[in-house]
Image (cartoon, rainbow over all chains, first blue to last red; front, side, top):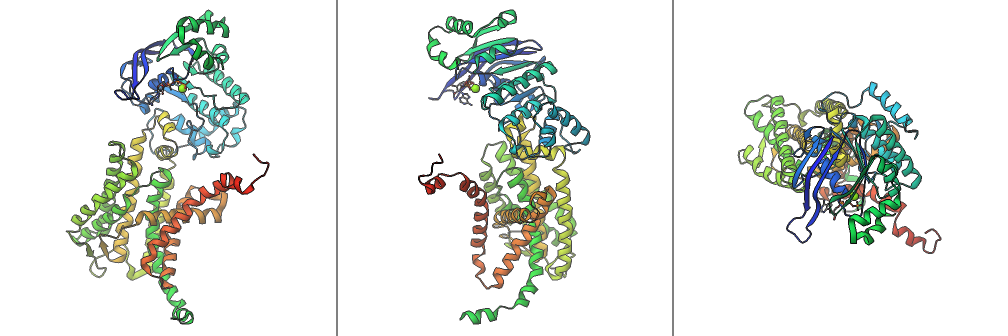
Length: 265
Length: 318
Ligand SMILES: Nc1ncnc2c1ncn2[C@@H]1O[C@H](COP(=O)(O)OP(=O)(O)OP(=O)(O)O)[C@@H](O)[C@H]1O
Ligand SMILES: [Mg+2]
């Protein structure tokens, strides 16, 4: 479904701030794969997701999604294939617009936006149903401005929006990190549900090792811009935090001390 | 001059007599404010192109009417010229990475020369209602008000419809949250160019109307248009919210933008009637805009600010 082939990305090349963020990164996802991504701060996790989403162009390498080479497509043209939820709850929705208007924008992702009505009666019913399934009471607040919702409500809405027009790939970048623990758990559960119901291929970055182990069918660990660990199938099911730490120690060698702290949160 | 003499010199009748003309001009400024509303409120860009494109609209209209074109056709060309001006600003901003404010200033600056060219290197061109068939004129204020009202109604309705469409929603989303918009597949740059173009088209239209109303185009007629537009937008919002509160929908917001222009100009008429120095008008306007723009910020501050904590002093509230 997704093929990353030898991706390279260096920020601010040739300056004092030069930073190699992706280095020979390759990854191959099968349809229906749900990958959790872990790694220390600055390991390049977000950079990988941004490269896939097309926030900027990569320096080298190819990105192939659903058989289509998207390496040279700008962000808004890739959007039809990709659903995204960001770490910052403010980033995924338009605060000055109504709940249903936000959903309507998402429903038209990847389509030409013409001069027919922005929100139609028929789709309102779909939204009401979908919102009901969130159990947040949002179905009665469809004409409220999204800016008035809480962070958790917004993330739930953003998730719904990301899956409304079934994407080939769902990208979740620490999308529960800004939420309180109980809301985070709910949003995570919802993510699982949405991925399963729609049989989505998904990548989820998290700093929580238990979450990374509990969710998805595959786990990758990143360090210094490449993947240093890739566990899937039965092996992933049996994975424990302890084993993960040990594996990490094996692969990353001397760096383990500094990174252990970050990973074991 | 004693105060008594000053007051006795003010004739209320004179104020009444000047008010209709003020309303007519206010309507035209209110139309321009609709254009400013699109960029300032919907696109979240302060577009300074308007000072130039307002004059461009006036210049095109007058020159074409003088060349024998019917007034409506001249206005149409004015709109196209305004759209082109907005398009330039949009391109400078999105293709060349120039900050929006600066892009607007650059276009506005260059329009000064272009406007002079349009007017055949004259700073002022008159078009007499006696010789030409104009859409509206200060000679017949009541019918000018009616014409302005009809145009305002048409434009408000048009924008109400347009910003409810898929494309209009995409444009509003761009102003509300660009990163979300890109993630939803919206070409943010294209939307900005589109919004700036539409906005300046409307501004040029109102420039063309103003030139006909006052009977001439002047190279400086657009000076400060952005500030007047902002004043109208803000006055409209404040008054609209005060009168309608929660019931203020998008149609109301657009209507009150035009009403804001009328109210602004009514204040101008009163200021002139009070025989205050008209050269101070710009100062007054700037102060009004600054005060109203700062109100939301100050309201926030008063709810949660360091200053408030300081005032409370030793309160237990951490
Ligand atoms: N737009 C950018 N410009 C310059 N440097 C960047 C940019 N984005 C990321 N970087 C740098 O690239 C490196 C990788 O960053 P990235 O955000 O991918 O880390 P991460 O694995 O997501 O870390 P975290 O867990 O802290 O989110 C960091 O050193 C970061 O400073
Ligand atoms: Mg990150």
